[in-house]
Image (cartoon, rainbow, N blue to C red; front, side):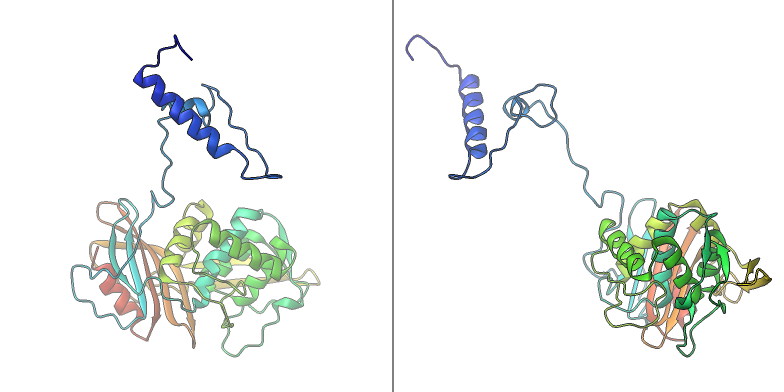
Length: 327
């Protein structure tokens, strides 16, 4: 190729172009080929590889999330009796406290946070749900509204009872009403968990009653609760201290509901630290899970926080108060 001069820049460009071509060549007979357009206007092209004209940088998955890789002691020696706990700032994604954040534990009724999230994402608040025999739950001690097959209420009513009163039969009503079957709804729950990065979570049912393989972590619950907070209806419901409504039985007769929240901060039985306001949250209790609580709180400056405690004992609210003192 006499008579043709190559500058150093041209040599480098040709070298890069040849590298791209070699990478894209088939590995052997019968292998598929892949084309990369040489197009200055294409976001992915051999032109941009050669010219280095694509300045784009992919945003990390956790760019707007707290990331927990180890225990975080916090400002004081808490020595919580709870098996796991986290406290995260939503404004600057700081981890203020973490204990066993990635340990697999039973979430009890904190499961219903995901149930509500999936329902809000895939259902319509005004759609009417009709109870089937699946609402008949006989487990001793299970929190129930007392639904019977044929009872009807809207999804909006069901979500308020689900999150405020934690009724397990209402969780079954929501699951069937939104997905057509409980199994299909549970698959939607697990798919949503994977999509938001809660990869150490596996749901078996929509209510959280103890079942083999029904597990999550304190960190995954932070992710799930953080995602649910994006929905205005969810934020509204978790702040409610009580709820009154009327649904209808199979004959069309009205059934009146008047329930108080299970969250003892909102009921006034416990008081948060003076610089913290508890906006709302979700409770959960079973023999296997112990006492569990997730809260959304704000400090005096209006900054937001999520706190999670899993598998505590009867001192749950005292421990949550001490955790909130880290804010």
